[in-house]
Image 1: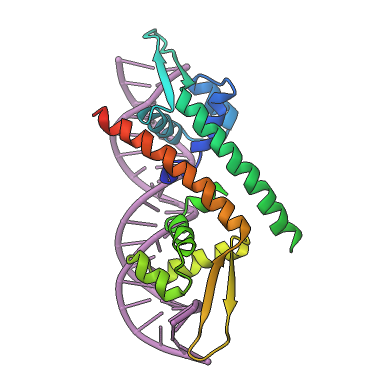
Image 2: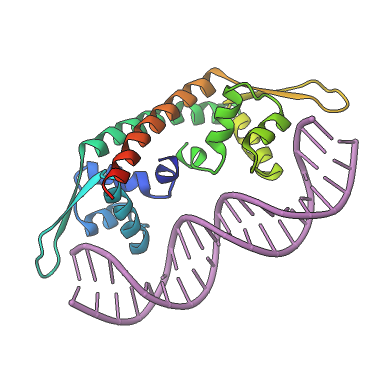
Length: 97
Length: 97
DNA sequence: CGGCATCCTTTTTGATACTG
DNA sequence: CAGTATCAAAAAGGATGCCG
C-alpha cells in the first residue's frame, strides 16, 4: 500500500477523481504535468486494487468514466489525514530554519 | 509527507525504532538488507522532520540512541492504519485472482 | 478520446571501501 | 560503532509518435 500511495501522482489522481474529474482528459488537464503513460499506469493500479471503478461506454470516439469506490473514499480520507499531519510537520520544520 | 513515507525503508526504520531497536547496528541487523547509506539517509530524514530524536553520547567507540518523538508515534499510528487497510485490500485482490 | 510502445532522462538505491 | 564518499546499477518517470 505504501508503495502504491508513494508513487508520484498516485494520490493526486485519486483526489482528482474524487473531485469529480471522471474522464482521462479531465484528469490530465487538471493535473497539467502528468504524462499519458503515468496517468494510464496509475488508473490501472487504482482499478486493480478496486479503489476506483472504470466504466467503458464502448463508444467511438472512446468514452470512459472513472469514479471512486467505497474503498477509494476510505483511502482518500486516510490520505487526507496524512496530509494534515504533514502540513503541521512541514510548517514546523520551516519555522525552525 | 507522501514523498517521505514512500521512500524505501522509511516506514520500516520508523517501525523498527518504535519496537525498541534504538541503535544504528540494531536497526541494520533487524532490517537485514538495508544498506548503511540508506539507513543513514533515512535516519537523517526522520530526524529532520522531528519524527525521531537522536541522542549522541559522545563516547568512543561511538554510541548513539534513537527514539520516536510524539510526532513519530503519531505517524506510526497513521501508517499502521494504512497497513491494516492495505491488508484487507490486498487480501481481496488476491482472492479475486 | 483514451490509451499503448518505444526510447531516453532523472532519481533512487546499493556495494564497496574507508574514517574518527 | 556509526557513519561518509564514491561509483555503479536499477527503477521510476517522461516525451514522442502511433492506433482503434
